[in-house]
Length: 237
Length: 289
Ligand SMILES: Nc1ncnc2c1ncn2[C@@H]1O[C@H](COP(=O)(O)OP(=O)(O)O)[C@@H](O)[C@H]1O
Ligand SMILES: [Mg+2]
Image (cartoon, rainbow over all chains, first blue to last red; front, side):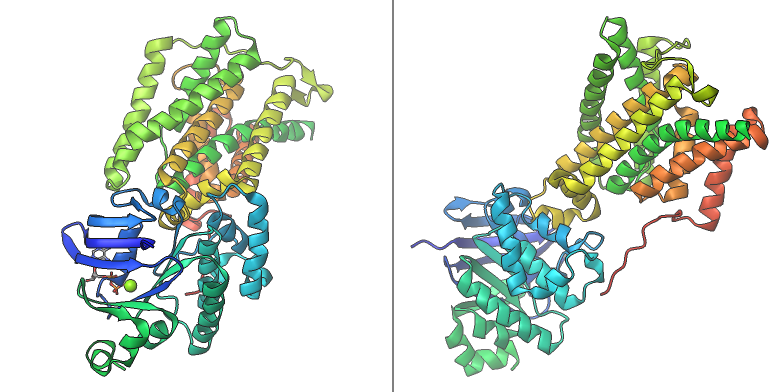
């Protein structure tokens, strides 16, 4: 079966600043792929490149069609949901409105209501805060909201940019616990970006390691996590 | 006492016009962070188009809605053609484009429809009602402006498109990531603002008469109202517009006389900017990091 997402020789740049120098990677249908690397390696840029948010070159195929150079709105409508760096909360809007926006492009409004209930099943706290202004949520709650907003698209591919960032260990544990349920219960493939390598490798099947815009290691997550030398030289644990 | 009530009622009637124009200003401000100085001239042009349709033989309300539709389309086109290319331009060049738009639309009005002052019809019975407290046109135009304001409120609060337009103005990056076509939302906002301006122009023209500079003073009052309520708060702008209408009428009758009424708008603008620049209902975002 061909991969759901396939990048070949992918370059990305902000204006004159080149950040990705021709990287290859795939995300398998139904799988979880982790993208690891130090701060500034280009992980966020990779996710932005997939969504058409940066200048890109090379080849980028999603579900059999090229998405290189297409607008972010079009790529999202193909079923790519992005939980962005910084969570992307609509601070001035309510939790409910944030969630409704997640389902904005969908036409099956009755199913959306059912999906709201499913999200409350994963994240009961969103139900308690449903009418509240989203800017008043804690960081962990905003992360839960961002994941719900993304899932409400009913995406085929979920891009997660450092869902653990800035959160207390207990909250990280809670969120990754729920993400395991999401991985098993939703029909969605995941590309997970993390600085916390041990966390990500325990969650993913495949992994890539990015260093200053180039992929330096790729393979099965459990093998990478067992490889002493990779761990020492790249992952720092 | 009767005089006072009369002034307040007149204030509410003109306040409805200011509130509509203030709302149009705020809608554009929220999306672009610029004041559309041409809002008044666009409304005047729409009023001329209504008059043109009426003179072509259309019944009043047909001409009214046709002009609203034309104005909406023109607003969308202006955003696409003029405003969008300068989305990332520095503030001063943006101001230049808005002022240029003002001058162009103003000259177009004069050129197409000449500069003489024209009478503009009211669709409402032009006789005093309720023992002279309010004229038929005042009551009717207040009804129309309030209906517009309520419709706009319901659209933004309770429709998915309205929510997407608000989201696009507040957070364009996140909006794109949920599939909102941000560029089109901004254009729709311009269309809506132009359509609201068209209504306001038709409601005020029977009172002030129609000439290319008809909306100049009204834009100033509307701007004062928008600032008073909070330039980034639609509800604030609407309440501010009504408040300015009442202040203007009371001030004109009891304080400064009708000749100096317009200075009240400037006084309000300067006072708000010095004491509370965010306005009475200006946005204070609650946010935890
Ligand atoms: N908007 C931007 N404009 C210019 N350079 C950027 C921008 N965002 C990130 N960069 C640069 O791109 C490189 C990779 O950044 P990023 O993709 O955010 O890394 P990571 O997510 O792995 O920490 C860094 O050197 C960063 O300074
Ligand atoms: Mg990053």
